[in-house]
Image 1 (cartoon, one colour):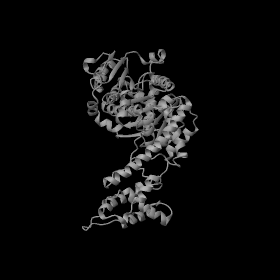
Image 2 (tube, one colour):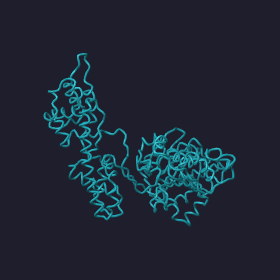
Image 3 (cartoon, rainbow, N blue to C red):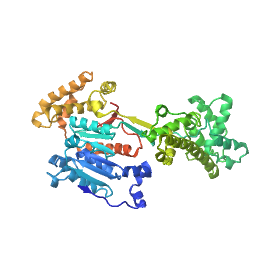
Image 4 (cartoon, rainbow, N blue to C red):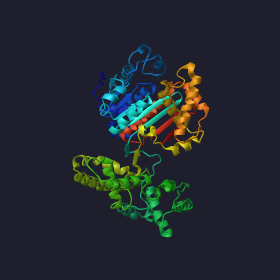
Length: 536
């Protein structure tokens, strides 16, 4: 059955509705989100909480695949079913209530069992931007993993099991242009200024300025001037704490003071900016590895635009860029008169535009050679964004869940973490063990209250067998085994809500291509309110 949404709102109304998220991923990110179509397999508590956090920000469409019926247990932990719906199809009930959260989202419910879809409809998942799966037995999860991996469709597994939350992202290759790094350093190029910037700053004469003009010079000019003095004496920029401290004293010596003893604010800004603005202009190692990979790729008509742009960027660095990335074109706010600040701001913007134009021309040439000119020449804005964010490009490569479960696992990562009694990775071991338990006994440990003691013994055997397969000793404490049996596979709503919100965040990262998603496993421990991310 299909639930239709209302026509799109006026842009001004939409901007008001989505104001906070637009500040995070912009109009283009919102457009990508509204073009997305996600599929949820099983409307469990964690599954519906994930969809809630996708419906509210305006995902384009959702499809729920679930042949289960609402039980009293669902009513106790799932806010998207109620007591009146006991015995009805869970996915249908959940979809109706989810659609009430945002009428612009389209929704579809599929009653067909997942196993039947996997067996008879291999193309079923092709239309989806991303698939979210929860509450799947191990054998079905592995089959789904292989189908989606072969189809190159991202899979995100979400799970809440008692007081444990789990997220696993499966995506063969995910490229990120707008990674939005924390604590981003400004790109001022003071150690290697481009010609137009150098010419302008050399034209300013501090000695000829009166106090008012001197106190309104942008601090980027102040740092440049004193860096020239320093380089004349030392032959290179300051490179350690002691030298930067000496450089700060050099700047302070040129500061003028008002009659009331107040120091110039622009000089104070310059002093504070020494540690961030005098760093050498280099290419980060992660970005350099991406450029090296792009240079080694033989482009073809099927090559992703990201790699075409990276190839062009590599050629820019080795030629026009003289070993550095394109200028970003943005500068921090500064205490300065408007004329000088705008002049310098425009110099950086113009240089950034020139650098991006060089890369764009090379992208167009590559596209023409490959016969995809029509596609690549429409990427002007994408190339500008690519160049602006070139310092923080990221490529995430993951392995399939099927590959992980069948033995290709990072044993060094597991062994190192299990030696730490505080590591959250022990819960990954326990989740894998309860899945093996379920495969063997057709029920989760502790599900039947009269079998808890027997299940503890059985689960311990599963844990030790799993660790033995990995070459690890029996190093998991019995406390963890007792805890998993105490849970009995129950979902706690607070844990499901938290891990569902986190999962939605990862799905949004994948759909918008912004921010860096988890690679590849995230574990949440609600007992201690701690979490960890692991590459397994």
